Length: 139
Image (cartoon, rainbow, N blue to C red; front, side):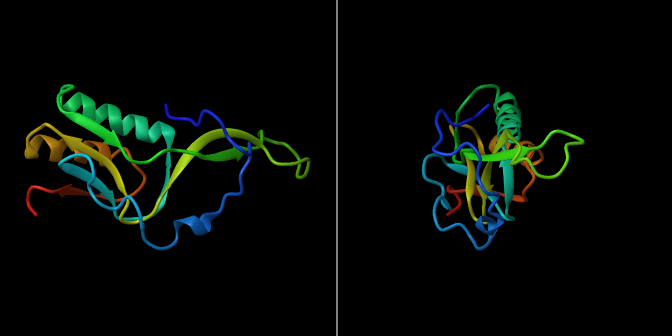
């Protein structure tokens, strides 16, 4: 799973305003030939990214190359169950990547179009945001 090696602050504000608007960067296919683009906003956990990556890798039978274009660097904290209010913020539980509409999540190269499309479809089912398959060969 993807987690940051080092952080400036252990606990962050949730900051849901980061989900507003459209992605200004990382919104085009830069490395591969095919891409999986987010259509809706959301927070994708490191576990979801790993599950999507595994499903793609298995479907293309470890052929081609896959790029992960997002990184989970935002800490999400949880307080233990049945703990009274107060006494500070909870402990870090997992990490999420904030994704805006238009952000490229995955890229792929070295496989045929129909195989890439099906692999991306399988990966999209593992993610909490709506996604779209992008093919640069058509343009």
